[in-house]
Each structure stands twice: as structure tokens, then as C-alpha cells.
Amino acid sequence: MKNTFLYIVSVLILAACNDDFMDRFPQTSIAPEEFFKTEEDLALYIYGLDSLPGMGQYQADQSSDNMATTGAIEIKNIMTGSPSSQTITGGWHWRRLRNINYFLNNLTNTNASPEAINHFEGLARFYRAQFYVDMVKRYSDVPWYDQLLSPTDEELFKPRDPRAFVMEKVMEDLEFASTHVRENVPTGSHGKWAVKNYYARTALYEGTYRKYHEELSLQQSAGAFLSKATELSQEIISSGKFSIYMTGQPQTDYHSLFSSQNLIGNPEMILVNPYDINKDRNSNINFTVFGTYEQSPSRDLVQTYLMQDGSRFTDQPSYETLQFVEEFQDRDPRMSQTLVYPGWVRVPDPAPYVPLMNRNFTGYYQRKGYNNTIDNIAIGSLDVPVYRYAEALLTYAEAKAELNELSQADLDISVNLLRTRAGMPHLDLNQANAAPDPFLMEKYPQVSGPNAGVLLEIRRERRVEFAMEGYRHDDLMRWASGKLLERIPEGMYFPGLGKYDLTGDGHEDIILIDKESNIPTDPEKERNELGTLLVYYRAGTVNDNVTVYLRNGENGGTLVTETTPRQFIDPKYYYRPIPIQQVTLNNNLQQIFGWE
Image (tube, rainbow, N blue to C red; front, top):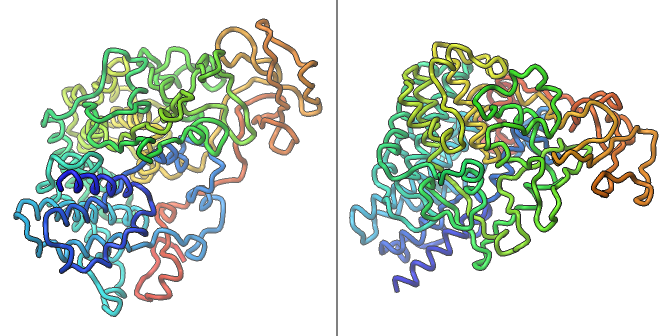
């Protein structure tokens, strides 16, 4: 019986990772008097509600300045179109909340121990908190419902509740969950430490959001959230349950976290989403993260990485005109473990990979999340890190810096552990504050105070450590840095027409020809010293019939990915309108921050 039950629970856990799972699992159609009888019934229901990010998290940075994309990304469409409540219709979904509240309304009737009931109540309240955090991020003020309602209840037609009230209830739910959820839970589901990590993430998000968003008039309460983030992340650190994964191989340790078929037991993993193609759990996303489909990393991200000696890449006088091979020389090792580097070999081709150019992409390729093999079982069985210990460390450092409480000892137990893994020099508090990076100061003008320099470096560390993992958009939103999204992502720099080495072996691989020339057939193409055909591209501006767009056309420049001007209206575009059909159904719902 126990084995059968665990198998059913495991199936539900895995199925819950699909976005449409809640639409296919009719929890509220279950008669409570027939189902909620035993602890096994509670487990069967609640673990079916668990929802983990999958391989799609490696695409989430499309909505940030880390990526150029041809995808229909909401924030890009908003900045380049005429958005309104009639055109932005997604996000106002409440079925998941109803399923959670249905469970909470019925679990106390179960014949189970008080400890078990508290555990499952904690999980349900955790899922409710997650639901509302996502709603607050999108709409700010939203109606709070903690009871199961019928279609005739007047509460269904109430106005928005203030953000402050909703987040107070969210923190209450997370506090209960962090106190009562068990540490030992089925693989791939939220346990005690995963809950605490998310709780700390939420506290950091809300604390910094309130600090930097004056339109909310909630700055005075920011410190309490930041203190909670510090407390929770310190608890995770002090537990001794986790550590940064490192084997003394700084050129490979970081990348192995995103190319492993088995992360269970990895000391850095607070929560893992396990995949196994042999059990119909396919993680294959190779076609998306690598190639000329939909997304490519931005040059701005490339310029964020430090030099390997800890100095700033952007302090070099010629950094803006360095070419691909030069850009990767002597950089933070995480850069070549996140992006395809000159000389990288793509299996099964024995020769170094020559990046393909594309009219709407940057020339840079994502390596993180890509499994460099032709073994389909291995490709489809990569585990996904959901919560890494690295996040707890950076939450701790950032919250302490925002509170002006950061010490060198704090850096040494947080940021500098990540730098040790990468083989990078440690971050020095006094040096960072004495000479803040102008490149970062220009990006984040809101940052000020005695810890401004080190806070900027912590932001750099977050961007580098979590690149392509889906953190960047939320970070820009909470830091009130949406204006950075107005900058259209750019790609590699080419000084003009001619031949270029993109593999770093000293032999040219591609040739840029003028827009009036025709690309010759293979027998007529030039070969390099190795006898390999050069890859030809006609170069020009976006108004020309060419194969690559350069900022200055035949005179060179960075690769251009798009030209439609972007406008980020502050504070309006930090939020979304309630869809017009919902306002029509409930006229107590009012649009805020200028939305109509």
C-alpha cells in the first residue's frame, strides 16, 4: 500500500510541473466527505498542487536586458505598442486559489495527527502565498480571498485590497508554512528549507520594491521586510544543511550545475526538479537555449562580467570595440560556462564551433542549460535547479547591504563563497565602496549611501551568478530599473567589412562583404589556411537587403537586433491592467497607475 501511494504521489508531483496541470486536475469536484479522511488523502491532494519551474526557466530572461529575442514577450510588446486593458488580457486567473482554499476548508476534518494537519496546512498556505506574490507583482493591489466562495457570494465582487494588506497576509502564510512544513518530503516537492528560501526571496523582493518605488508610499516599511530576508537567509546559512558545490575545478564546477542528470544530493540544491526521459519527463530544451531560435544573449550582459583578476572589464579604454575572441580573454570563468566561448566544440563536430550570424540576433550563444551531446536520453534527462544555496547567500548579502549593516565578514560567508567557486578574487567591502563602478552607477542611479559601491557589486554578482535562470526581470522591477529595458539589445562588434576569426585559433572563419555583392557558390568561396570554407555574410543596415545588420552598416559597429523604439513609462509599466472583461463583470475593480 505504501509503495503504491508513493508512486501515485510521485506521478502527481511530476505532472504538477506542467503549467496546465491545474486545469486538468479537478480538485474541487472531489466530495470532501468521501476523500479527506486520511493523511494519505491529504498528501495525494496537496502534492498535486506543487508546481515547479522546468527547463523553461532558461528562457525567462527574454523579458530582461540579458537577452535579445524575437519572441512575443509581453514587456517588449508593451514598450513598443499601445497597451491597454483591452489588449493585455492574461494573468487574472483564480482557479488555483480556489483549489487551495478548498483544501484548507476541508483538511481539519481528516483523521490525522495535529502535526500532519499543520504540515499540509503549511503547504497549502505556502502555495497560496506563491499565488498572491505573483498577483501582487503583476497588479499590486488585488482582492484577498482566504475562504472558499460560491458564485453568489458578494465577496466575489469586492474591490482590490491594498498591496500592504495583501502582503501582510502573504507573510503570515509564509511564516506559518516555514514553521510547520516538514523537512523530509517527497523528492521534487517543497520542504522546510525550500519554503524558507522562497520566504526570504519574497521578503527581499518586497523590501527593495518598497524602498525604490516611491509611487507606493511604503518606504517606511521596507526595512522590516529586509530584516526578515536577513533573518531567514541567515537561518539557512546557519543550518549547515547546504554548501556551495565545488570540486576545485573553477572552469567547470559552475556549469556542471546546469548540465547534470542527477542533482539529487548535490549540496547546493535546496530544491530540484528531477527529469528522466525514461519516465516520460523530458527536459529537452536544447533547440531553444542554443541556436538561432528566438533568443540570444546580449552584449550588455557580456560586458557585466569582471576580468579574472577582479578588475572591471568596462574600465578598459577599448572595451566597447573589442571583438568576440578578445572579449572572452581572461574573464570571470562563469562567463564561458554560461555562454559559448571561442574554441568551444559542439558535439559531434570535432572542429571548434563558428557562431552563426542572424539578422535579429547578437552572435552570442547560450551554453547554460544546453546539454552538449547527441544522446537523446541525456538531453532529455537534465535536472533543473529550482532553489540553489547561492540564492540564500546573495539574499543575505543584498539585504544586509540595503540595511547598511553589511560587514566584510558577511561578504566572506556569502558573495565570496561564490567567487571562490569561480576562481575569482574576493570582493573587498572598503575597496568597492571607495570606488563604485561608473558602468553600474549609470545603470542604477537610485543606489546611494555608504554601501553604494558594494551594493552595486552585489547586483553584478546576482546578474552573473543567475544569468539565464529567470531572476533578472524581477530584479529590474524591484530595483525600479525598468528604464534599462528601453535599450535595445546589441550583439558582437565588427570594425567593418572583412574576414574574422571567431574560434580563437588565428584563422579566419567568416567574411563580411558589402551589400551590393553576391554570396558566391561554394566552389568560388575563399578557404582559410586550414582549408575550411569561409562563411559569407552581406553586411549593411536594417534598411538593406543583407544577412547581418551592423550599427553603421558597411562601416561596422555592433550587431543590431531590432530598431522599433522602446518606451518604459514609469511607474505605469511596472504593473498590468486588470483585463477589461473582468472590470465589466465587477465594476468595483478600478484600474491604477494610469491604466485604462
